Length: 267
Image 1 (tube, rainbow, N blue to C red):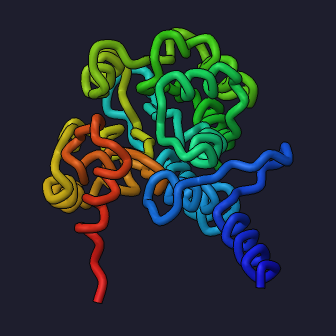
Image 2: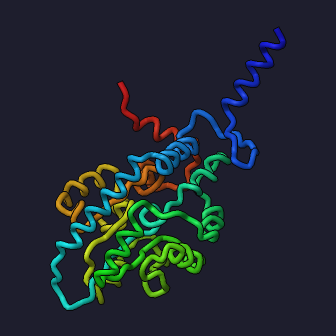
Image 3: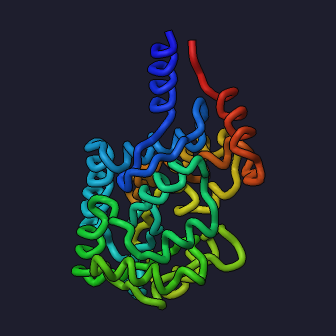
């Protein structure tokens, strides 16, 4: 009888344990959206051919629209793009945190970006290089911090991405809102299109808005999507998630989990 209890116990233990490549094991919290949910979305980002297809679809559309663009001023033409989950793939960071039962942590994120080894989002390098070949500059507007500048340029340069320099990299300063930085670019350049994975990458109409307002604003801008605004898929994080708990990032994982469960539709 003891043998059966031992076998059962081992099965329970291994069902709750994630095996790492380093042969070390980390026990992740069970029955929780966070961080287990982020492990699942990272799995999708890393291995789903559908994810790759969606990214390529976005950049294919961007190329078509770029070719159709008609210049309206004498200003130089530029594309404004976000970086994370738009140009660079940070799913490895999500996995690293998730396997330890943790969410986003500023210092852990800084440790990751300092490595300057993020892969690229499918289709991003080819599209940005194509834009550069047509004489269009690229501005990178990101909410990475100033201390991440050198490593960010190094990571972009790893793939020979155009305009990977200080002039074209606009980092977060006093606010996470990107509208002031977009306007700064618009003062001297004509913005052909904006590319991002978060709706706040396009307009301040989505800054700190409720889920309902975000949805209605998407409908109000129906003609922009796939034209001037090119959206990349990111199920792992973003304002879509923050909006669900009113952007109160001080909430614990347990508190967020409770909110998420009340929002799910079932039958």
